[in-house]
Length: 457
Image (cartoon, rainbow, N blue to C red; front, side, top):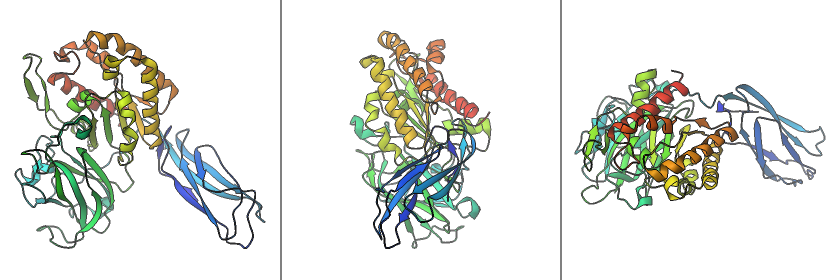
């Protein structure tokens, strides 16, 4: 009756709905609903269902082992012919495995209504360059007609604005810089190979009042050739009220089977951008330097080939695990990515170092990720040369290791404590953040980790 897509062990799929209707003239009584292992149900059905009434049964897939999983949902009542049985099936997969999604927008024709920086900088593969409009409103259109139609029935579109520092800049009272504030994603069936069409645009998704520096949309694109962002309002600041971004589009006919949301604090915000690393220069305190290093996805692709995983930087400077509890579950409602990292603890260590409180917060964050049907990836807290953090972090890392045991769905991330303890030259003179070289190492460490753990290289 119901078939579910591949789902990682320890995670729960979105629900599918069964409608139970009483089409007879009498009342159904003694209704009892049960379900077998690997599946979960919730329902709106009372013990009695009046004639002509309906109720719903929501079924989710929560595999306990890899491979094909089968089950049954049973609806018992005073039915004349006995209980009703519905078959359920799905495939359980390892939490540490992923199906690559094909990036289909790289280098395709792209047209902007205005450009201070070239439109082609949005999809050229160099995330240190970007398209920037000349004011707003503005449009940016991609011609996907050269991509085989079979690869673009459903697509996953994501844009990144690395100029705005925090994932949600409003949370820390910082301005946005040429960020996309309000827009509509539109599609067009006009033939490709020429100028972007003027009419015939069909809205597929929209966003208004945005303060996040990246966003992604899973879209039904069947029958279309063009996709564009119609940006009406900039989330910017003085002299920075244009629209500036990089844009990727992935084939998503099988749904979203990959992608990373790097949730964390200022270390994540600094080091997991897509563009060049900008950080304090260890050899010249007080100054900053830039190092040209590939993004996480580009580095993964260099290792595994034919796979540039999508990556959003969800770092919020200054955040503790307790701060993040109030926000992560809400963000995950619109983030399709499969993997969600929880890179927190550095600020907990200086604020209190309360191990029990840290575990409780991290547990809530892990449960939020699992509840959203995603895979939580939790690294250890990086080593710090700050005396207070150095004293408190080991106890907090013990709590992270306890999470690994309590939640098999949690995939242990890189051991950042050991790495930076063995490489203190990568810690800046503030004794907390990686310097520019350290950020390069941090980004590369995550890329190598993902290539080996999730992509089998």
